[in-house]
Image (cartoon, rainbow, N blue to C red):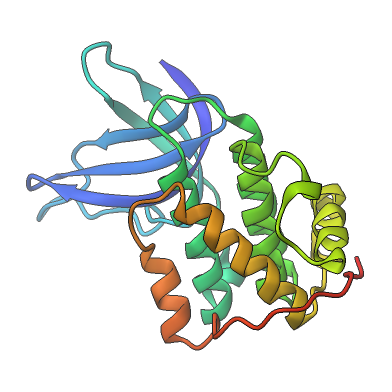
Length: 227
């Protein structure tokens, strides 16, 4: 049994009364957690047991199964300012999708958990969701070992300088980050290329961003960023 913090990435309804929560935890990494007795005529699902919530949960790991048991959960943060904004919700969905796609069940990465929570907090407070999303993608790629040296990446001098500055920006200054459209396009093209070598499918959140007109055609040129 272990109590830990978790961000719910997605959920699946199973049987008549149960849920599988796919969550990223600080201490256990990604888990598939079975929650019993929260569905059906006599057991309504708590409103906050949803993706894009931060919870304190109690987990029982099972030796012969990749599905753990979740016995209790307490809401820490529903990220309401994100939920009230369609654009912020769309970019938060991208962050959740990327963590889900780029991590394996049981791999412990507390630094990825801190990055995710810090990014979601910045999305709540910030005014430039696109820049915040690029920050998250770049740092997630770095933590995954796909961005080792900025010097070897196919970027313009301005793009390399900006990328280096992004990697040095602390989470508590993330709300100040502003990328020009040119540098954001260049970084997005590079990120798409790097992710294409890792993921075998298109993320639904990227399709949603495209449908909303938030992730349009990519041009090329980059200037340094102010943070």
